Image (cartoon, rainbow, N blue to C red; front, side):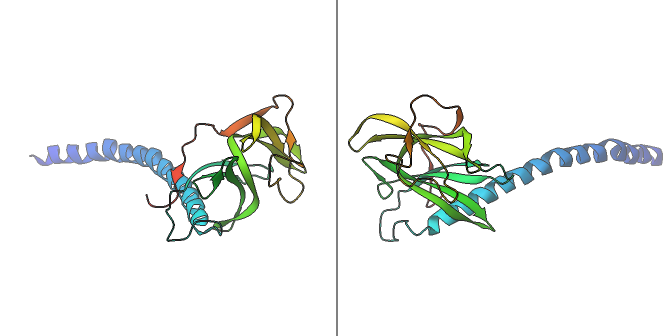
Length: 192
């Protein structure tokens, strides 16, 4: 190859390959960072749940699954986690336990543990004490027919049982958004 041809290839590479590489890096790297940020948050949540005091012991069968939604419940710019725990250890005839967790450093703090909840879980437009109301389905365990219950934040937590006061039976459909659907299968808590 002549010197002139080598120069042409060198300039061509600089003119085409370097800008192409820069464009690829600009597109791919932020996408990878978003994925890592998301997986980091999911990883922190999974680790917290594995160490949560109510989890089954090492000798029990570890069948727990969880469905989670990250939502800014108090409009402070930070997303809290709503978690629905699925396993024989967390569920009974009335439903399963759900948690509302607040990010705390690299982990989470339990705001509320609510028993006997059923899916779907909705975040309602209405707020109480600065936090969005939640709605969960209540049914089974002797409660027939089922109904949707509103959980209002009392300044410290949401009600721990949706089937009685201070939780309230919704008389009509309230405006809100489903964050954990009724067909959520969940993610295994232990293992991959």
